Length: 137
Length: 137
DNA sequence: TATAAAATTGCAAATAACTTGCAAATGCAA
DNA sequence: TTGCATTTGCAAGTTATTTGCAATTTTATA
Image (cartoon, rainbow over all chains, first blue to last red; front, side):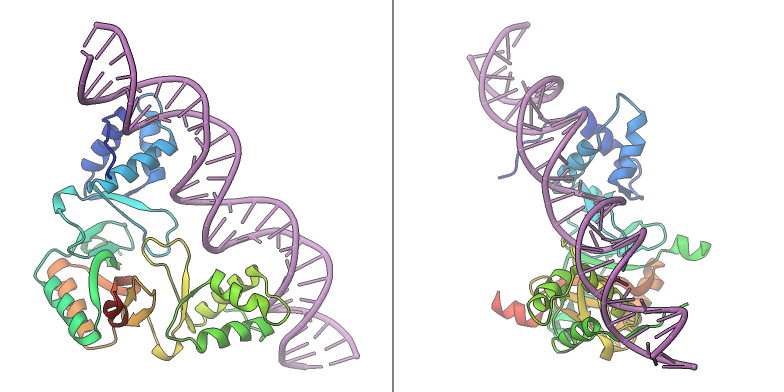
């Protein structure tokens, strides 16, 4: 069963920070560094535990870029169910993009028909360069 | 510069094992367990170092499945340049499949035209169920 | 508003999967 | 066979994350 959640100072701070930077992604260490200075001082363990809870509740997406050691978290609540589409991650800036368009159906269809593979959003991640970084490279 | 490679008992054993199970993937711990009993006894560090070298030389593909902690290695030499296509991994059996067909072009084209995203094979991994596991689930 | 049960926090210690340093052993070209 | 470069084994180190536990907060309810 899902555990009840209490609203706390730290959970609020983390949510606010990620929500107001919804087009970016952060590691636990990033969040820790950001919130350490402000208000009392947050604990890294608390950061991990809250990120986990926010991910479970669907507000955040947690993912690991190929070749990176640390998980990244990005605010994705407005995208609804992120299990139903796949994501693209920029290998330069790390940002996450949602493949929310009709092409999802084509992709799913092709994989199933020609490769017998049933695609799932969970765990699928395409890597490459986003428009922004492509220009600046 | 690329370093010269000596041929050794362990490198041969690891290559042989992976090559003769080319449709499966293994973690360093798997290989270690497999080769520990046979012949003298291999060291885990040696396994890691050889897997790394074999990956660099293009014989193996090294990847991490979403939600897994350990890297997996699979013999992919016959597939040529695995940077030029993306891969699908079965979340059930862990096996790797290569998207080596004309659809690669469609996918690349769509992402670039409609999302400004330049897809790269390196680091891109689709997750789902392979034909075999789909039947058995 | 007081209270008690449940959730959250901080800190230190534990994990897990690798990685590294270094001296000894091995491979190989000449 | 010699000498230098690569590989190996072992112990110790890393890094990101998790866990145990006692103390502190929240929140629903009396």
